[in-house]
Image (cartoon, rainbow, N blue to C red):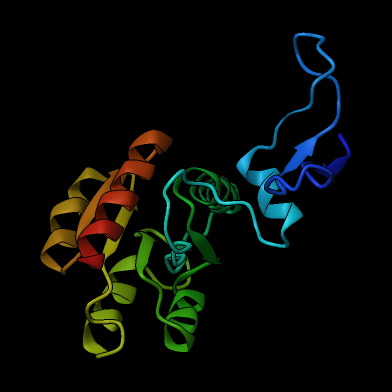
Length: 183
């Protein structure tokens, strides 16, 4: 990492940090500092956007609950949504665990498998719609059974993604639902 120093001290010119490392073209003159270097030199944090003005207020991180009895599906969806959609992901390994997670802290979106051994997704969906804290939370059903889709839509789910999951489609559906719920 190049060292930084304040230039212009001897001449009375403005004091701007400059990187004193070698220039790309091999010249000896120091190059101008980047905005990130300036921010670090003055004790600030580097900005990611090139906009002028006050720092942007970070948006709250949205939370998605995935309820699926298949551990591989849960892990895969968690990883993809964290990296591609930038959301916080909570996981439940079945219907009862999903209801417990929903009762503690309702998420912004639920991805719900319909066929789980302890309690099916339809029961979870009915429970959600019957409780005021979770009644408005959108639910995306994950299913391999085509016949179940119409019943799930009639029970109040916002959409569905067929298994085996197409991850790019899942990310797009999650982004769309979160954007619709936000405003």
